[in-house]
Length: 320
Image 1 (tube, rainbow, N blue to C red):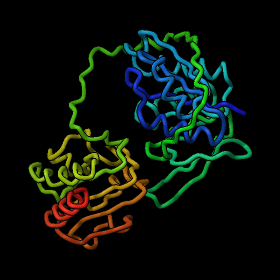
Image 2 (cartoon, helix red, strand yellow):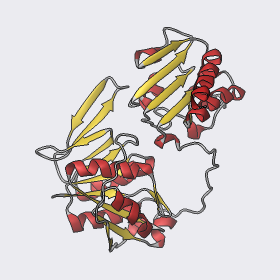
Image 3 (cartoon, helix red, strand yellow):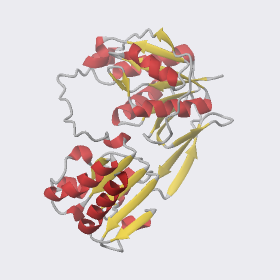
């Protein structure tokens, strides 16, 4: 069976959920071969094997930590040369999309970004994307070279599937460009105790209707009751009510959770572009004509300061 390269997103050996989702998709089109790079790469093998990786190619070198994405591209290019895979799958983060684009240029292939599904086709893997604020669903394939595909988090379930997970060292020769941009410092992200926004199964977002930074406590309370991440619209972020790191939209982060709750968000195209692939969308807005209602599965016309606390109380009572 053809092999599929899967780029492993991990932190010191702790594999992040989007990678495990990629392994699920990879099994649909071939045998997953994971590529883990940097400190703790070898420690990923156990989890990757439990989720279908037949082989785990590992490499560790100072370049992976001290420089930006080019060393990782060098490593994926080396793995591609060794295996000649049927596809390369990468998590659809900002870094992941840059890695995918650079790799596609190097190997003379096409790239598909932000896929939400993947299936085998007679002429190669077929990717599904959602476009133009969910107005269109496209199915496409790369017609030249090895498809390089980035996949949005929460696009596939994490499925246990025992495989060999044989660990092999990957020989990497770094290019001249690899050391062109050095990382001078890192600042750890302040932990909120909530899930990472782009990976969360549930996201609760607030917009202009929240009407102030102090009022985001209402949004946070609902999110915490659901074990959800907190998002914000561009209007709320521009007003200084919530950090930019939590912005959902075309100029913020793209999310695709199982449940997305939009509170006090009108539904401008800029915001819809970042959450349109959510599986179930609920909107709470006092304006019955708000564009967000054209997109949702369930809509509540009402004052969010009355509706959201009641919803939070109901969630807590059912948990109890």
